[in-house]
Amino acid sequence: MFNSTAFNYVNVLTKAADASYKRENVLTNNIANVDTPGYKRQDLNFASVLKRELGNFKYTSLDSKINHTRLSKLNPEIYTDNESYSYRLDGNNVDIDTENVELASEQIKYSALTQSITSEFTRMRNAMGS
Image (cartoon, rainbow, N blue to C red):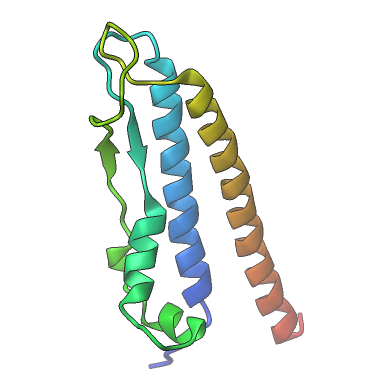
């Protein structure tokens, strides 16, 4: 059987892009519920999941860390931000300005990730001499 690590970067980038897309949906849900009494904002944090997984392989190169990354462990969960201060009387803790900035930032991140995936495939295609 042929075993290759050629797609490891692409696989990690794909997981990151999937998480970014999910976070965009969470943020738009927060924005949609800005006027819902008692609603608590939700979020998704992929960066800490990736950092934890890559941190399991200390003192090695990034290539080695990526090659040993367990993709099944790169699944962030949505969490509810109950501890955020709510300045509103209705108990809702969504700040529309913060959510809009986070959404714009996440859209830029998603775009960069998909461009990186495309670049990886372009490099592979060029290496094969097509």
